[in-house]
Image 1: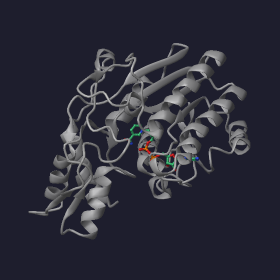
Image 2 (image 1 turned 180 degrees about the vertical axis):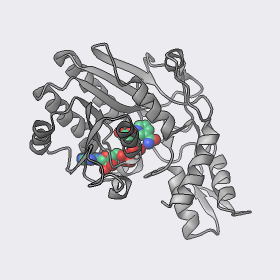
Image 3 (image 1 turned 30 degrees about the vertical axis):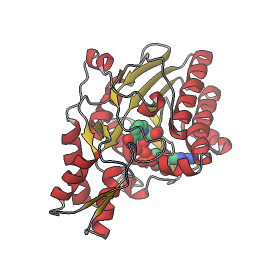
Image 4 (image 1 turned 90 degrees about the vertical axis):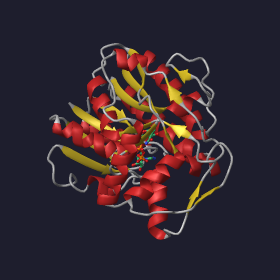
Length: 316
Ligand SMILES: NC(=O)c1ccc[n+]([C@@H]2O[C@H](COP(=O)([O-])OP(=O)(O)OC[C@H]3O[C@@H](n4cnc5c(N)ncnc54)[C@H](O)[C@@H]3O)[C@@H](O)[C@H]2O)c1
């Protein structure tokens, strides 16, 4: 297949592209390096005949249409978004542009050029706060508490309409925090960066008890590749994740241990969430994807430990 990966210079995208190429696909990538980096793709740009890269803002519908016209892709993997939730908490326009508008532009191009197959990266953030509940795909309580979660839910609604109106086959995964090599943001990225600069102490947002499932990136890309050949028209939706969780303080402990730092004092900013819009506790109901034959190979703690080792080995 010829697959367009939108947002492919980012963390998940660059890992997924490696898998898609290894399976013999042709990959066309569009990214404007808003968050992703050229370094994530430097082993491919100009070096792999099956890989084509466009440095392009996905909000420019004219330019993106021209790429669709030239490349004639079979499948769109839409990973582009603002993944820095704290940045859009300060300026929601970042979210509207990079998460919502990129989705609208891609759907319009798919409609115009009759591309029928899509993967969309959604998020646990569409559920909002569900303290103590394991939320399933059909949960009625879709009440995002961040602009990021709100825009992703808006994208899902837009995709629902486009898929119905244009007979598209769409796979949507809602996943939690994903970690692994080429990380571009998040708590592990922050802790390692700050401890490298000043190993005298570590500031931790919230009370450190925020507990979330951390999914290893190769487990996620494995699931995308395995499920992307959707046969049904409309949306096929899965929660994808791990059943275990890791607290923020445990992540700090793992980072310090792997960096060989002993007795580092932690300074908690206090409060349940790390910032306004942060969901402090979250657990998925994963029955649907487990019943379909997929389980993550790493627990949440294993994913954290492996990621810290890889980031320390390869650099931020
Ligand atoms: N990483 C996670 O924990 C996580 C969890 C749930 C969902 N997701 C979703 O998965 C997808 C990939 O996440 P990621 O962690 O790889 O994030 P990322 O920021 O590393 O990758 C997103 C990429 O999109 C690109 N992009 C953003 N706006 C663009 C625009 N206007 N034009 C062109 N390119 C643009 C960025 O430069 C970046 O390379 C995102 O949609 C994200 O919301 C991620």
